[in-house]
Length: 381
Image 1 (tube, rainbow, N blue to C red):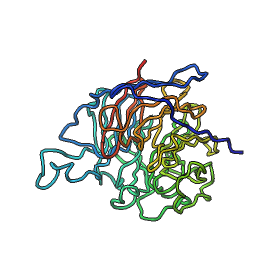
Image 2 (spheres, rainbow, N blue to C red):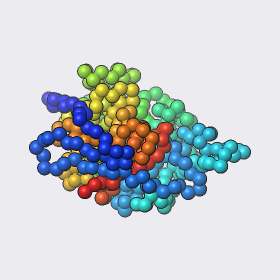
Image 3 (cartoon, rainbow, N blue to C red):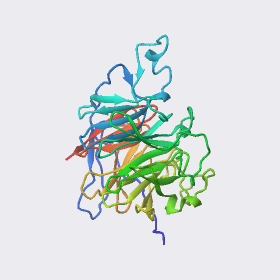
Image 4 (cartoon, one colour):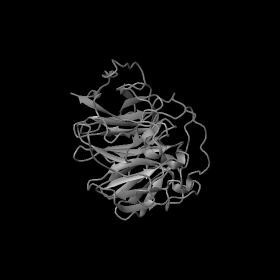
């Protein structure tokens, strides 16, 4: 029997300044107040070699608190990279490498990757994870970015210097097929369950499913759709229009994120469905809740991370349409706070998508066009 869904509504929340945001929590019986953050307007440092970021489709903090950034240089327009034209149009700029690693101060300590860097390198890089051994996982979503070259139907596992170790799927222009586990469908994000040696993929921008593979061999293990339906029941046709009064039985998509909580539940973002669905690791549906369900167009559930406290009492959900990060009670799905505001200045967001957290609880955000940037928000104690 499916659990009753709960809705999330934003109420009575205000922004206290451009760089500092005060969070207002509704009076509830809980031991811990929601976290507060202050933007660091000086992070990151200026990039070397005249580099400019494109759409930032992935951000991850590794065990050494190095911040990994995945960008899509192929999406830059000629007027953004005038120095790269022949002859140069302007003094600036050059596209950055696809993968950059930043230190705590925001300086670049390593970089690599570009279109054609390895065989089957994604046409439009999207989704990033660095596992406990330092291996880098990334995918692509060219199906949603105009289809530059072959469509991205693969995830790559690489060494920390970019050497290819494993490929799951392969590029193809075949149509969406949620029943075919030999290829993917514009993967949005991935998560490695280290103990189980399993890779979870939010698949994604063409398909509408979650799929799980062995992280060592790449062998398919299991998968499911919205409400835990088997892959065989996922409709490959175009999804129905968004209707918050009658939630869709299929993921509306993009299936933009997948994360595993400390207590072993799988959280999945159905972006234009304005919702988070929660499953067991075997794919059994547990519950869903809606994040600002008034949001139309590109939707409100773009990405998420868990709060820094040991029990992960809160979710931090990126909302690229509203330019907000919602702080949500993980227990009941109610909004406890928010930070950010639509805009282009420090501490504000346009299309905020990926999000990560370091060992101190500081938050890192990634934005796609038009801002093409990463920001750091310091946890206030």
